[in-house]
Length: 194
Image (tube, helix red, strand yellow):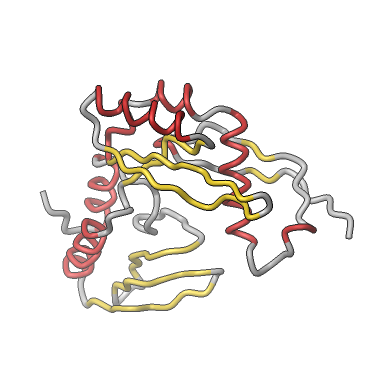
């Protein structure tokens, strides 16, 4: 079914287990693309750091939703869910083997986590509703330290350009077990000494 309304698009996103990467149907995002009903016109927009830029306007909901649907379906990252953020190739390879044995498609990559000393982290992603089939792997292969590592990485990215990271003091980072494998960060306190 191809959605023709914003509500149908949101239902399609949910039924296909897309993460909340797009601002559609009331979903709030910090950065990215969204679809909005401005009363007389529908807007496809991009928002970053609180600054919104309308990119395309549509006279009716059906045309706007068709455009958004095609963009989202073409986005190769939109339906990926990170299930592993690990420090060793052994852990990554174990995840790969387990996913392959379950006939679950996956994608993995490596990112530079730290320059001093040089450290990599290995990320493993599954697609769409396969996230619902791997909860045991998430619990087994993404331990508390890896949640903190992933959270620290995201915090570094979020605050890059705003605060020198040496001065960023966060008393606690909490992974509240968000649905669909998303990592939500709750910053409970800033207590920084300069």
